Length: 114
Length: 114
Image (cartoon, rainbow over all chains, first blue to last red; front, side, top):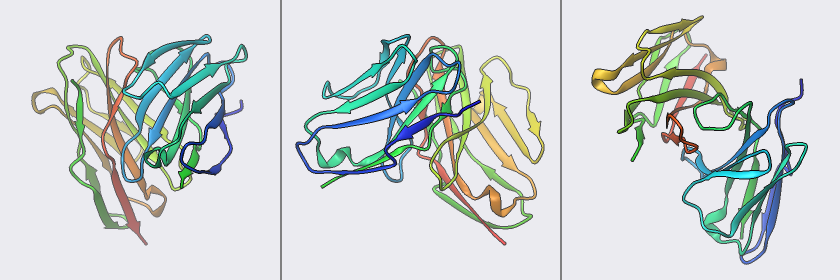
């Protein structure tokens, strides 16, 4: 059974640029959630995708967008990057939608915005 | 609105000591779920336990135990006979039933010295 994988591991961008982060969910999982974790903070929920549809969204602006593909892998896109977007971005997959189920997390992508 | 408070920012112990990590939560939901996750230096969050609001039984899993008390809105986590491998950041999280948005605490960094 393959766990959740994310790419790239690290990324450096400059303000105003756009970035795409990728996530492959655990085998058999149809739900993917994305989180932003700033240094020294707990993860903040960005959104969740279930069967290719956005299923719930946290308090993030529209420049944070996502996609889920038929194989349940997912992308997180961030436009017009700001310095405060520097964080660890975590992807988590689960068997069913909702936030009350066990989630399996990937190792994250560390994004630095200069 | 939901809130999770982990008042202990960092705890330092010597191996074999017992340690308790505190978690206090606020919610208006009558049905909700509480979680504990471990985040080692590698970054991915590892699920430890989920407890629903109707199950106040304490749980023990090896050296780990959890004490859920609705009367004080607390869900504390105890590690018995701590080991160096327990060194990590531990997060408590809360989710209302039917919600897609979990709320995480800020985490407690546990350092276990040999």
